[in-house]
Image (cartoon, rainbow, N blue to C red; front, side, top):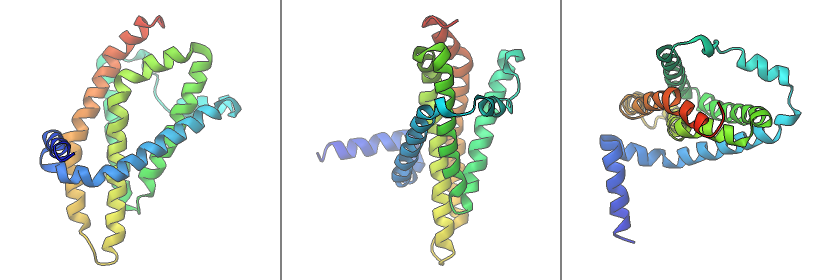
Length: 206
C-alpha cells in the first residue's frame, strides 16, 4: 500500500509536472464533472426518442457545413471550436462556477441525444467507432477544463470572504490549460480528422 502511493504521485508528477499539486486538487471536481457528463449523456440517450427531431436539426444547424471543408479546414474548425469554448467556459467559472457546470450537463445531454438519433439509423457500432478514437482524449480534456472553471468559481466565492487569490488561481488555470489541456485538444482534433474516419470505415460504416 505504501509503495503504490508514491508510484501514483510519481505518475502524476511525470504527466502534470509543476502542476501536479494543482491536478490533485482538481481530482474531486473532475470526478463530479465526469459523473454529471455521464449522467446527462445517459439522459439524452434515454430521452432521445421523445425529443423533437426538428429541435435537434436546429441545434446541429448552428454548425457550418463540414462536408465542404478540406482536411486542414476541418482540423482548424474542430480544434478552434473545442479550445475556444473550453477556455471561454473555464473562465466563465468566475461567475460562481455555474457556466462550466451548465456546459458539462448541456454537452453530455446533446451527445447522448445525437448518439440516439444516429444510432437509430446507423447502429450502435457507428456511434462507438465515431466517438471512441478522439473522444477518449477530447472528452476528459474538456471536462478537465470545466473542473478548472468550477475551481475558479469556488475560489471567487472564497475571495469574497477574504480567502484565497482569484488572480493566482486564474494564472495557474491558464498555465495548466496552455501546457496540458491545449496539446490534448490539438491531438484529439488530429485524431478526429484522420484516424476516426478510418475506424468508421474499418467497422463497415462508409
